[in-house]
Structures are given as structure tokens and as C-alpha cells.
Amino acid sequence: MSAAESEPGPASLPERIGKYPVIGKLGEGATSEVYLCRDPFNDREVAVKRIFPEALRDSSRGGVYRKLFLAEASLAGKLSHPHIVAIYDAVVEEDSGYIVMEYVAGGTLESRTAPDNLLPIDKIVEIIFKCTRALSYANQMGITHRDIKPGNILMSGPADIKISDFGLALSAGADATHVTGVGSPAYMSPEQIREQALSQQTDIYSLGVVMYQLLTGQLPYQASNNFSMIYQITTTDPVPPSSLREGIPMSVDRIVRKAMQKDQARRYQTWEDFAKDLAEAFRADGLAKKSGDLADSEKFNALRSMHFFRRFSDPELWEVVVMGHWEKVPAGRTLMREGETGEHFCMLVSGEVKVTKNKKLLNVLGAGECFGEMAYLADTANVRGASVSANSEAHIVRINVADLANATEACRLKFERAFIGILVERLNLANTRLTSS
Image (cartoon, rainbow, N blue to C red):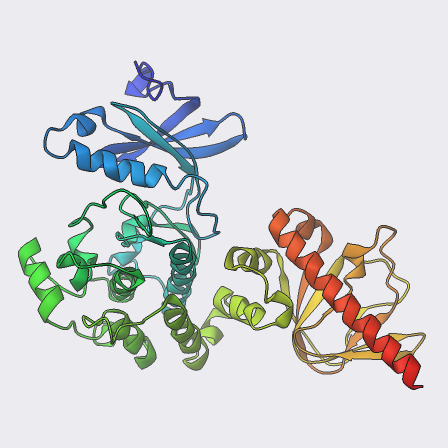
């Protein structure tokens, strides 16, 4: 009996996989099975994928299965992004192996491709935007997924996702020869079918197919066999999504068509280009109004445009999106009052606020600036040293000190560095005013 496997308990469940007690079975595929387990050391539930020993012993494909399993296992601890399933641990032995991953309870996007169970259009645009940011991050880490499909995108909230299953991932600069001719045919790019050199553009094409299917409830190419599917992918163009579902804006049609261009020169060249068009379509076509509150894509882009967040990585910026409390405030509202205690600070997304002390004007702040940061920086009681009120209608992001304290160390350090920069600028401004008076 290997370290990856123990004797089965009741209902044919193993008691544990390695050091992880088994709770139940989540599912299985052709070469592996996935269990819900308990991580006793970190007190959390995890998903554990265990490869079938017979798959590794297969005389014709065993070497391929081992290579794919090792490729995924090698990513343990390397991809840290809020929209990518984290891989915590991996063990690969001669005739067995398992990978320990973050457990996401919401199921996959596959259930939302049925014509009678489609998501609202604005939610789909949000989801695809988050996919572009996650896959852009993976690309920056030198990784091409190569198997983007609804079954590999997990739902972690109404419009929140996590990309999973990097078993077919292509890593730039890796020593091992990568397996070709793998992936799901319906989602494969023309160049992947032809076994040509691959880049981030192959994942862009596949995500375009996923977007088409989420919007319409059907694949862009209908075929009874793989040969017919491959022929259509390489030679024909699908009908636009708007012809299959009412309410799809023409801009969304254009995005899907550009993502699925057969000619790579006409396809999106980067994830940033793809994401930019999605965000613009969200604003320009009234999708944001249908959502009510600001969408996460709008929040992310608003923060990314601020000088304050210029040194934040994408994962760190997503932390801010999640921890921030976004508010629209009318002109004249007092946001902070001199002498009162406070446990939060604010970022000004739009509009203008004035800072006063003893009813005397100290400063006027515009979009992209912060106020109340001493609540985080001060060691003593968080007593406000000045009052802040809105000069005009404004959008603010309120961040609680306790939430920032629970953020990752990298995120906290970026905040502290940005705060120091602001304090230096304000001291220099004060000195300039003193010397000129």
C-alpha cells in the first residue's frame, strides 16, 4: 500500500489519502478521482485528486498520464490568485499520486451552459473579465492553460470564479517535452488542432468559445464527431451570439468574434486587450445599470487607474476589491469628524472632498487620493485629527483597519509604502507653503 492510498472504509471510501482524512467523494474522470478531505494541519476542507494506478500502468498512455499529472503537481504553491484554484500539496510516486487543492463548493460553469439555465448577460461579462485577469496572471508566470472550458471554471459566488485543472498547462522554459494533441476539441484553437507553437492566444480563443456557450447555451460549432468539429474550427465562422439570444449587445458580439478569430494576427494579442474591451462593453451598453451596484470589473479598473495602486499586483488589487466597502455619497455629507475615533480609511474614486481643522480649510482632495489613513498608521487611539466632507457627489472606498490587518503581507506592505509616499508629499507641500508665506 502506497503513501497515497489506504485501505477503503465504509461505502468503498478510503479512510485517508496521505495525511488527509476523507470526507466524501466529489467525482471522477477517465484517469483520476477527486475526494473532499480534511486538512488537519490548516483546519480546512480541501479537494484531493488521486490518479488511478492503472492509468499510470497503461502500456500505451501511461507515460502521457504521468507527464500530465506531474505538470499539474509541479504548480503546487506557484499560482496565487483569487481566481485560480490554489494547489497546496502534491505527492507523485511510482504507481500512485495525489494533488491537494483548494475546495470550491459552487460547482462548475458547465451547468450554466444549458439553454434553460443561462446566466444574465452582465454576469457572463463579469465572469469572463475575471477569467482574463486570472489567465493574464498565469501568462505572466509563464503558463498557458491549454484546456479552458466550462468544466474547468468553478463558481465561487454569483459572479465569482476560480480556474482549475492545469494538468495540460504549458510552462515556458520547462525542460520536459510537453504533450501535444491534448485538450477538449470543441474548445481548441486552430493552431492547437494543427499542433503548432502555442501562446496565450490559444487560451484567448478557448475563452472566447466559453463566452459564446455561456451566452447562447450552445457551442459555436455543432458536430456529431471530432473530425467534423475540427473541420469547422479551422474553416468556418459561427453565427453571432446575438442571433441566438435576445439582448446581447453588438459590442459583445464583436468581442466574441475577435477572441475566436482563426487568424492569430486578427485575434486579441493580449489578455489586457481582451479585458479592456469587456470593461468598455460593460460601461457602454448599460450592463452596469442592470447590475445595480458597481461590478467587480469596474472596481478593479477604477483602482488600477489610481496612482496609489500603481505598484500593486493583480492578486493584491483583487484583495482590495473584496475588502473595500464601495459607497456613493452626496455633496455636503461629512465623512469623518475631527475629534471622533475611527477604524477605517477611505480612497476617493471620483468627486472631491475638503479637509478642515477647527473650521479652517487644510486641503482639497480629488480622485485617486486617500484620507483617514492615520487610523491604520497610528499606534495610539484612532482619533481623527481633521474633518472630511464631500464637496461634490463622490464615490469612495472605505477600508476597515481590521480587514487590512488580515490581508496578505504583500498587500499590507504595498499599502504602507503608498501611505509613506503620500505623507512625504504632504510634508513637502506643507514646507513649501510655510517657506512661501
